[in-house]
Amino acid sequence: MHEVGIAHNIVDIAEDYARREGAESIRTVALRIGAMAGVVPEALEFAFETAKAGTLAATATLDVEYVPLLCFCADCQLEFEIKDRFGIALCPHCSEPSADIRQGFELELRYLEVV
Amino acid sequence: MTDVREIGLSVLSDAKETRSRVIQVEKGLISRNQELAEQNRQWFKVSNTLVFNVLSSPGSGKTTFLARTLSDLNNGLKAGVIVGDLATDNDAERIRASGAKTAQITTGGVCHLEADMIAKAAANLDLAGLELLVIENVGNLVCPASYDLGEDFRVVILAVTEGEDKPLKYPKMFKTADVVIINKIDIAEVVGFDREAALKNIRNVTPGAKIFEVSAHTGKGMEGWYGYLKRRLV
Image (tube, rainbow over the protein chains, first blue to last red):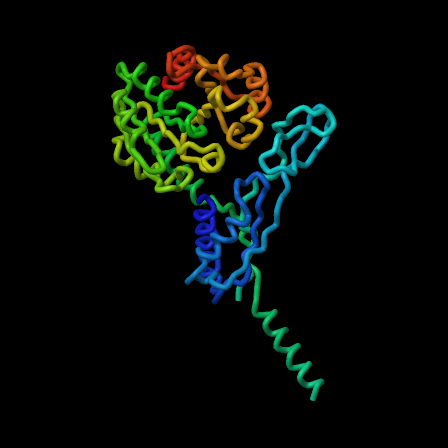
């Protein structure tokens, strides 16, 4: 359900920018999605297919850059990646949990390719 | 003949390439919600209303916790509650019994509240006359974490029945908490709740949050929370 609202936001923002630039249609919508953004990529792509109908983005495709979740362990001075999306952030060196999340919350529209 | 066709194709594709262009956007996808949340925050400030947002899993005792808080503090406190629910208004009914004014948002299946829903609901509550506004979010530990509603602080409730590793499983939600309530401590022993592990996990994920261990059912431990709330209300 969450992804439906986000898909509509994507279309709204994209149309707004495309109109302002006098574009006829949007070919590509480039996104940046962090592993911790709370978005299921497949659900977002599915929702986008519905949200884009009848808009300037009607034939647009999504180009998604996924940002892995990186945590930092202060004791070991070590940056490490968490593969499990809602996984526990345990330092691979000392096994202590880390709350210092360095990246992975991104949920952004990067650019549009328009004609 | 072949050469001509090849040239023709390449010109065509070049023309196509030059027609397409890139527009840099670099904008957050929920930035509209953020703007509306800031508007709410200004509005709450002007009307001198303290606002907190309550988040938890379904069944953690949010409504019982709020109903007890509001009826215990109701002596002279003008409070309102915005209740977010997927489909029914049963929770609003229970809160109303405590004497607080309520506004119901039935999201119709949407998993979280957004700032514009709060603006509409708050308009029905005569904000200027309220010292405290509580937002009871939809029971969900994932999506509501991403949506600022304009609140002053966030309260995340964890029931002892949910297990002590929940803060590690939902770090985004717990990281945004200003207050963590450990609820249902009256049954902690029966369900084998590891208190030390839970406290350690909460402190690891959100070192700055205030932690209160309570039973909203029996009232045990609620005084500490009331003290905190009264200090915020001054």
